[in-house]
Image 1: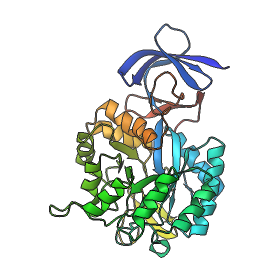
Image 2 (image 1 turned 90 degrees about the vertical axis):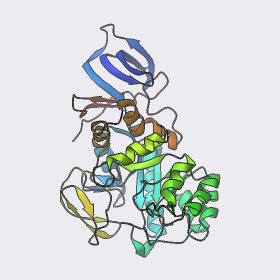
Image 3 (image 1 turned 180 degrees about the horizontal axis):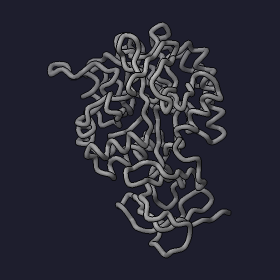
Image 4 (image 1 turned 30 degrees about the vertical axis):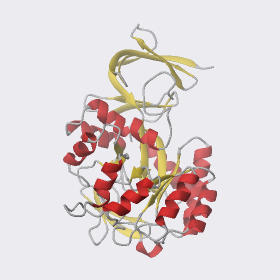
Length: 371
């Protein structure tokens, strides 16, 4: 049994900020206690739960769909920015290629490096495909889905589906039976079509507003269907994809609804230039990633930046932390993540005055700092 103490910290717990320290036993928080001077001092720094990113495609110059090594390196890059739990997200590609990528993800999950995989496609709308390669989009196919579930070896956690496609509701049913979270996204669905997916068991909205039919006062579409269904809603809080008022609107429906994601591509942490996503050319200028036709193509966001921006834009610290940690953890059924409380895995982010990452702990061990 390993046992360690952290002291002199401002701990963001479910009950608010507690001045004190933590006892960590075998990688888990065994006690939250008042400061007594014992243990490793954190110098009074604010400590928040490790971030949980359920939608990320790359980072640090590594595209997760390029190779098993690139997938692992991208995960490592984001870990340095406070993401202690990741789902690797795979863009639309031929089913054989997706199966291979899912096998890479399964190996990482078996090694404890990630929580699993998210399939962002290929069962998406041509009308709202965004940066998803239209050449590889498919109508819902249960046989293809089963192949991908088998390739993932029980580590497929989320699949995004456009519910208006023929056979989509049957696919939602199949995902629910397989224990996979069905998400509504990249969709031109009407309000009623999207609500039908939620009625069949879909429990997540993929990057709300982005890749969706916009709200109209006579046809509110999938955005209001998602909010009315009460499901958690992913948001890309980079100052490009969404206005800050959108976060406030989601929070107004319930503090458990808002989920911060990065949707990051390999350009994250590298800078402006030309990149490739799903076989399509992407240009990154001033941090915004776009295809030649102007469609946004993921982001260059990290979770620490998404969290800090939310706080700067007026989101309560506790709500911002939940959106970056506890809420996404709940989406994928990880009850031991995203909180600083006894029994939780010791995933911690030590923040500076401007909410920049100073240190990162994952499962009780300090990791590399932000790169």
